[in-house]
Image 1 (spheres, helix red, strand yellow):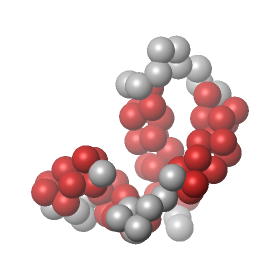
Image 2 (image 1 turned 120 degrees about the vertical axis):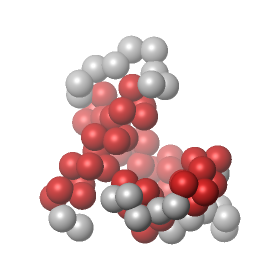
Image 3 (image 1 turned 180 degrees about the vertical axis):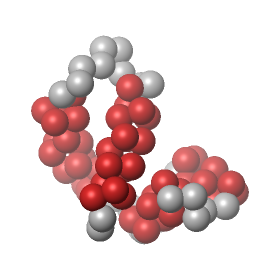
Image 4 (image 1 turned 90 degrees about the horizontal axis):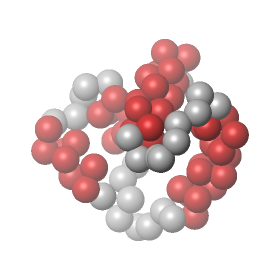
Length: 73
């Protein structure tokens, strides 16, 4: 994965989390990223989308319908 893709994912993640938490700190993800990742992996079900689906949304390769389905999931 390219560094640019990683930066896009990190920026988008920060934006989404910032909208959900009561107090945002610049180092929130650095302090909690590992724990959040472990929870995400543990919560994976058979219906979960492939990782590529998330990258397609970030890179603008997904249709609006596909994006809405992913967000609902």
